[in-house]
Amino acid sequence: MGVWNRDRRQRSGPGRICDPSGGPNIRTTRKAECSMITLTGGWGYYNMGDEALLAAYRKTLEGIDELRIASVDPVRTARAHGLAEVDREAYFMRPAEGPVVVCGGGYLNGRWRPELPLKLRRLRRLSRHGVIGHALEMRRLDAPSISRSSRALFSGHPLAVRDTESAAQAARLGLAADIVPDAIAMLAPHVGGLRKTVPQVVGKYVLNLVDIAKRSDSSDSEVAPQEWLGFCKELISRIGSEAVAIVAGHADREFARNFGIPLIEPSSVRSFISILGSARAVLSVRMHPALIASMLGVPTLAVPYNGKVSPTLGQIGIESIVLRSLDVDLAIQSLSSSEDLSGAWSAAAERSSSWLLSAVERQL
Image (cartoon, rainbow, N blue to C red; front, side, top):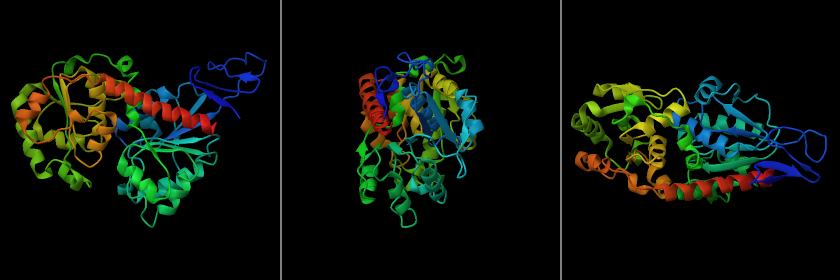
């Protein structure tokens, strides 16, 4: 059984040390034998925030000899990360040769049935050599049709969730779960190196606008969905030509076109981060654009469009950026200056990545 060396970012075992460069074993002439980790999560669904989550996992686990990435849309994910190869997540895909990390975010949110039972079937078939659940948002997995599959997938394996409601959901399934900050926190130590200046958004308010009232989870919104359109119109009227809409996921473009402002759509995780980092300020309905802008030190407001936003930001320690009311004056005032949240981000990155690396160590 190998041992994961966190400092060297490699796996070693009795009588051998694995060279992370893939070179010959430095104690013998045999080639290093390092394990494969398969990453599966919400990527491939036309949501650049979820692609950024994958970037966080790739950075954190870069010492693994081979990372296999499974996506529902391999072409989209490969393009977002500049990768040559991504596997298609499908029921008949080749089972993993090592542990599977079911990665954080809303990938296992039970609101998205009927797709969820199919996901659980795919994951159980894929993860024959163990599974790790990390920073998951677990909702409605105790429904009669899927509770047995949900329990079987994680029973006896390391499991961490990103909020207390998810921990309670796990407990109802008979599963013990730790609580860690959202996986995007693991990107914080690396995000500065991924940012380049995007001239067309310098000095601009970058807005991610989604029609909250049309979302299936709008009943959990902390702001009034019926007042959201009016708020957007007034805000854009006030900031005028300094407003730019970022298209970060499905349906963003359609709603943003209501306001007659320029649209910018990132083609990769690097361009996504660069746009957010170049902005004067960011207001976002989608949660991960707000989180990334915050970790880059950009004045940010996160719209609590459903029940996950405030708890997730609270676990990171940045709940101060949550938009508390649809008051345009207060919003513009909040976006006029940034708060130093680097300490919170550093601590959150350490908590989330340490849990993941420890779980990987136990599974290898």
